[in-house]
Image (cartoon, rainbow, N blue to C red; front, side, top):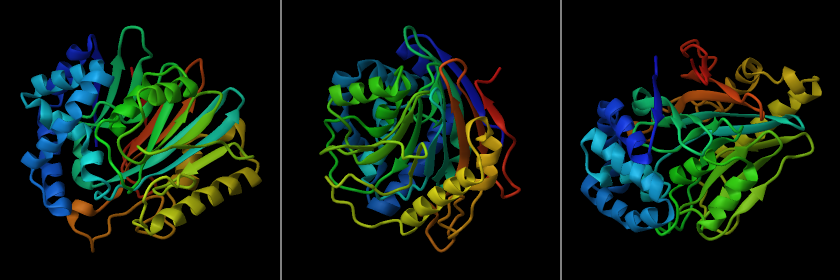
Length: 360
């Protein structure tokens, strides 16, 4: 797979128009995929999805007018209705956990001034051709480098200030549409200059609309944000400098979270075990490399198909099958933050080449 690489710059509207034009076909494909997923998992049409998306218009315009302007630009560039784009960016909230995202994330302290942030992103393979590597250059803000789905303004990646984000989906109620959609919250983190400023921004804007976990790091600290519209819990690094997360809350008990992915606790225990095994073998500092993490952690198939390296469960409907679509390992320091991305299931023999962010 040779993913599209986009360099976006200018005003929010200009950034959106560039995005919409460049990913014209991929955005339409995403809408078709999510239309099928909503129909299968929730029995609602795309027209109904767009109607629900309208609930987010006023909060987005009020809380994050620059991001809403970017969404309008995406719609203009892709020649779509604005609520098609709002719906894509609120798909986690509208689905309210009925989609079966996976994902296993890990933050690891290299030193007092460097962190490694990494994850496998698990999702339906139908979207893999609609992923893009995107850089966004905005006046007065750090430059963003992320892997995202076509039409979505914020996802997994890092910025030139050394702030990075990973995402773990959570299935829990309630959803409150007057708050920030999780993909917008990710974008705000990626516009921040530190973990502290990211948390302050999310709190000052009233928090998020649905239960999710964002693992956010900079060079000096990592924090696991177990977010919900009715209360948050923040996870700090353990004695070994680690934070690991999968798809259930560890400390946030404010929400109603039924068990939904039986493999999630197993993956969490497994990634902790593998990381501590590496520590026991003397891995630390600059020996915590992307290649080592891919080989020793993110290619792990224990408890397959619900493994860290997730494989499609063919007994499930195609709309709810997940597999690891990419792995990202970010080296976060204040001087020259960077990342390596591999599309596909690492260690499977079918993964793509190692790609660098930033790219030339």
